[in-house]
Length: 107
Image 1 (cartoon, rainbow, N blue to C red):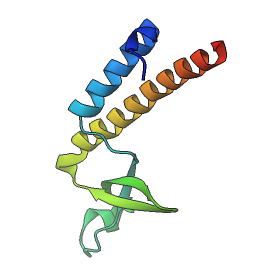
Image 2 (cartoon, rainbow, N blue to C red):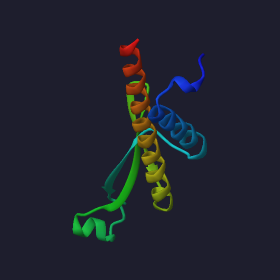
Image 3 (cartoon, rainbow, N blue to C red):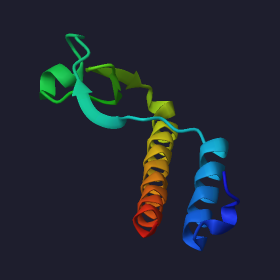
Image 4 (cartoon, rainbow, N blue to C red):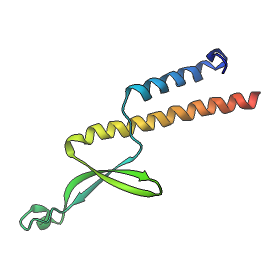
């Protein structure tokens, strides 16, 4: 492996940010789905109004299947941050990959 000096400044910067982000911030691959549900209680407003209680689910892929995991209200903000962190990592990986492709084309 050659020294990092042969990398462009942008690639070095993106690799550094990617490593810092991946090591310091929790992340999760998935999407958050906002939904509603009816609780089943006879006298609840959700049965009377026809509208359900708000709920948030984490949608992830396990093998070839999609799995929905309930996210409690108090953890929703944290989970949104973790999903956003994963998207940021993917964005940085894409930039590094493009830099590598450009370098390959020049050689």
